[in-house]
Length: 571
Ligand code: FES
Ligand code: MG
Image 1: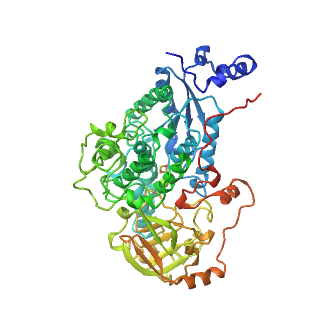
Image 2: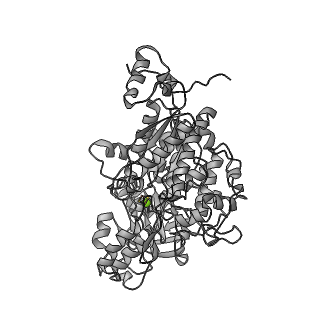
Image 3: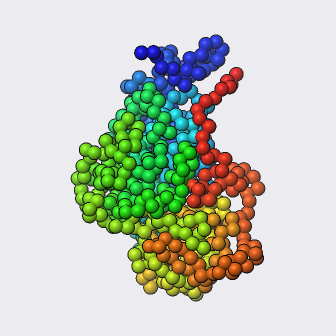
């Protein structure tokens, strides 16, 4: 058989001055000459950072990938990209997702790599890396960092979802401050990302359902030795993918995206999934619209009993059989013939999987909740759509009409929400404007608005809340998110005033404000507030190019890809 010529030969296979330059400086790391003999060069794209605690164990994980690459006869090269931690970054990590995708895209294309392993963990690191890799389209495999072990406080299992409950209890005076603080040390007790089915777990399940990772990638805890085994096997497999030229675009077909949507419904995955999946589809040229969620996931029930829609944690999902146990239950719905990174189809990968705990993964005939997934709403309040996650909402509020209590921005909300004179009842609809992609900017996770203190004191735990922002995948409530167009670009949300009557009707997939077109037009003519444009820098670029939520909030100029070819040399 003829020896395969890989992309990296355009660097390391050269003679003369150029080849000298490409190899000589690499050799300062102690790399022997045979590493440059034409074997597959595997980039390991690492989002390790001590400022991204969920990814802080990634140097170890990268070592496991490298062992696998070496074992399969490849040459691994690890490189950093900007990391995004949900907990520390202001004003929101989402502001930087597209920036990281550009970092990833350019880093891969500019360097002598034949295939890439993406190390992803905390929420935005997964979509950012996958988006960037898609625009280059080399053989690519994802290794997720894995969830934390379930938190434990005085013998009680706790995770990120409890944070929202505990915080409300603390605000209502039901939880002493010293106890609230001592819980901090109990929740995040191992390496890994949030242990519930928040956005990070939803993204890890997304890559597995898309076929971009080896089976079981989503749920193995970060602290479990089998996470490193998966990383090692992934390192071995990416070398094979390069030899087979199994590129991202061969895996990321429209049916694969539909599989991921169905999986996200069955696991009670994050609302953020919609934005990130649409952005990824845009990079590979797969036609996917927000509206597709309603029909693609129709009939998919909730099968995973995980917080915030249910009771358990990611660790429990792994012990119950992991995502393959869920996908097997969905076999009658899925496109089982979709190719995955291991060279087998998703159906083949899941056929032999078993469920070891029916309290965690339900059989399709007896789901935990017939209602699942992300429902897309339309109406005069959200012409381009809005989303809600019914499984995390209160059933009694899924059809609700009430008067709006409007907050013009997050500062207005914070200033007034605990005012004892705030004119709200449990039937009010809280509306928060100007937290969208361009308005905030960056579309932060503030949509699960805190309940007004005076209603908390009355025992109210849920209300209809509407915004153009997002919410944490770990959060819950009857929360309408991602309203498009957002207030700051002239959407009807920006025209709503306190007292307007809003009707949410999830079964009929509508969201309306009782205002005639003429009234809306009149208010629009008065010129609602527009987003202030940053004077310079990345934020200005972001505001000028970010698309609305229903298009995935990617930059307009980043849609599609530019391939992996680079024709010009550096010297
Ligand atoms: Fe990183 Fe939740 S904060 S996954
Ligand atoms: Mg989050």
